[in-house]
Picture 1 (tube, one colour):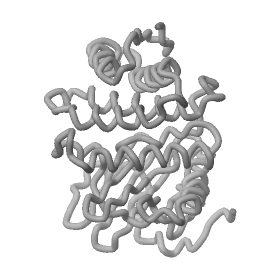
Picture 2 (tube, rainbow, N blue to C red):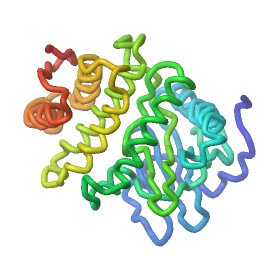
Picture 3 (tube, one colour):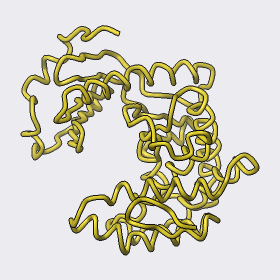
Length: 285
């Protein structure tokens, strides 16, 4: 893969070399999102997304951009005959610092947002669950390790066409050595752990969770006989605790205490009971 490609298409981003535009307001069709590892610029008018990858170690930012391009291509090939599942198409990329990738803007709403406004018995919930099952099968067959970017907030659902789109392929590749020999359990546990983390956010405490839990229950049930609840629970707890490892910050304390109680409750509702978390990332059954 070449180090850079058609750099000219990114010249209009030269005004954004650092995080200094974090407080820049979103205007019109343009939205800028600043995350811990980069910047995402969404342009509704041109139906494009530009991702800029940043890390104190330039080689890490490069590897993430390279993985995004590589894995998005692999996924596109894997679903080429599956019109109901899509991945964000890579239009161009430039790996010179800071590395950037130009992607197609997929249709639909983030699954996490979509489920806010539907009942648990809405047919769309079962439809999304079926497609997530298929995506897990595809991921296990297509990618090495466990993909951190495989989570509900990185999936878009278009209820008009019924297409589920995956929009992020740059996450870390694995969750250490835990359950490496059981990739379905590990990937499913990661999906559930990330969902529990999002649902346990203080901003979501008043959210009706029935549709979310129904979706996760359906995905779990679809792998019955091929998965282990103990391994899934363990992977989910490790994933949740990774998000709370923030020292003595208020956020870290919240997720290590009250947030953990909420997650234990959700895991029980999912039939993954007897989860006792510890702050070192282990799970004691």
